[in-house]
Length: 295
Image 1 (cartoon, rainbow, N blue to C red):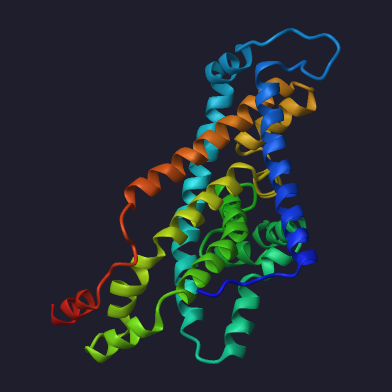
Image 2: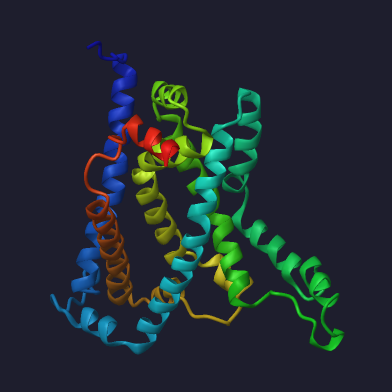
């Protein structure tokens, strides 16, 4: 099998970029691990290795409540964004014109290219008391009880979904592009319609994209500060806000422990989904589509 050979300057550039990215990630992780056992690691007055920060974080009811709140927001936003991302990717992949795919795909990922602060401020105007949503609610309620959705949990969820939906749609779109076109044509020759092709051939091969989408969604929501602060005000106290509060008072040991717990949680979620979806995901046979047509 022919292998792609890159010029030496390009090969060195890609290698150096990979090494730099690895150093930045694993270097930051190593520093967080060091700080979690000793918050004075980089100071002159060292206190020695200790598990006090772990004990403090795990026994703090305030941090626990913030963590549960963030998990609730992450679960709600993920349940909304992942199916919508799968639907969006499936619709774009069915566009026959490459220009149509480029146009619709560009509109889908446009939020990724825009400023998150400006987007949250735009949502705050739309969801405020004098915004369009408030006017729509006022048509069915008394003016005295007419309020927008700003500074509520639904407003926070809307902002979080706007952040992760383009990522999910892009991931599913790329995964659906990898589905064998010959397999789809063979299934259609056997009489399978569009819904059966999607259910028996395309959907089972999106297991990896599903895992990545959920993982990135949870990471994004757990670390989001803009949506809860701009759209939620002081309605909820999230895990990211608690971590940020500890960094403001130079409590780096507690902040490092909280960051490591998020890393452990994400790894556990990824391992769980890999275990649940173990086995060949691309071994869905064309006979399955035929059985679905006959059923």
